[in-house]
Length: 468
Image (cartoon, rainbow, N blue to C red; front, side, top):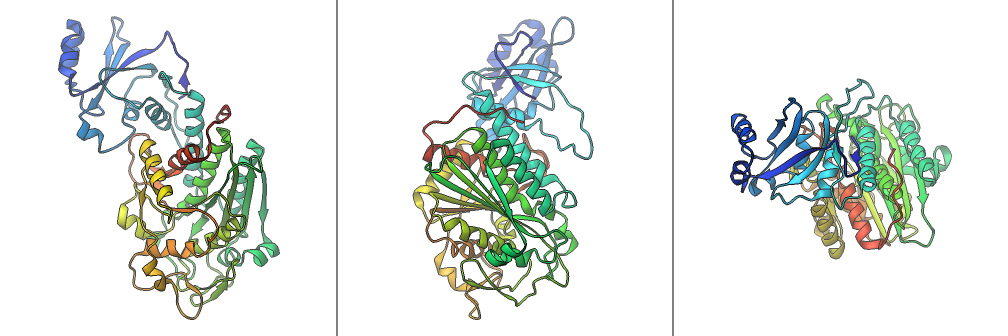
């Protein structure tokens, strides 16, 4: 469902009407139209959609209820709800007193057209939108395509997207944008990234570290690190089947880093971008790491493995240590890391952690501006003793069960000493369909981070490349 250029003679006016003022607007319509609206019971409640037939029975206009402010505050991408309800056609927005964010609603319209059809083809519906005034259609399409890439990766089962599949997607992204990329595996991985090697040692597909660099060398340096656990059995501390059901999404941090990188490169941001993805499967075999094992990290810190199901922080730690060695201007980690974050904030509101108050304020502003919600949680230093087991420098799974998202973030912070750092603990999944967010893989935090990077580092961008 592309955004079409304006004007378009085929366009059907889509009147977006809030509850306030609806009665006056309705009463000003021709008698036949007013009678149809009343007969169909349309009252401009949020999400209500109604096609208005013309003399030949085909839609000559359509209505979308913008509701009341209190209803709109409960969700986002409101206009996207119309996509599934409207007849096929080309529509042009006509706000009737509705204060729309045209770019956000146009993006939601495109996101509503996403279908994961790799295994079951989905029929296409041509419900297109004329580009609203002031909106760059290439930019919106580029962002929507990157979100869809993230969703596709998360939705793909581990049988078809293990560590090798992640590498293939990573290398394809690099080729599309002319980035330099490599994969570290085998003996070099074991020597340079021992915790990544240990976590992935039991899997059928070998562990690897994926590394991509793009942009001019003297541009602001931004490094993304995404957790790439293609499937997580829990290792020898095996998960129950109910907890394993969604573990194909445990590479959601890697998928989101790949999607964000696609946005950055596709939009031509003037950055020196590096993307690191430790790609593993946490499985079970004679080579599996064991509870009580002590691993030596790339940074030289020793880690006691008190739970093999807390593997994400181990692979991220080695990748973060590498990223920190060149002290980028901003270092970001993205990971489906803890159930504690979901208990605290639910599936739709990922927490982020940073010690930089200005960075936190900027990211919170970017999240609100892009309807890509995030919420700050603290790197609470008084909890540091919880991750210090005595027998080693660090404990990957403190006992007690309290503040699990915070202690995981504190563990990661130990591996970053030279860089401004922000960590996002995402869920990567939409449990039930919502406007512009079908059930399944979710791209969380990427659009907020894109806005943050644009606001902080990029006064200008080049022309967006076509999505695809």
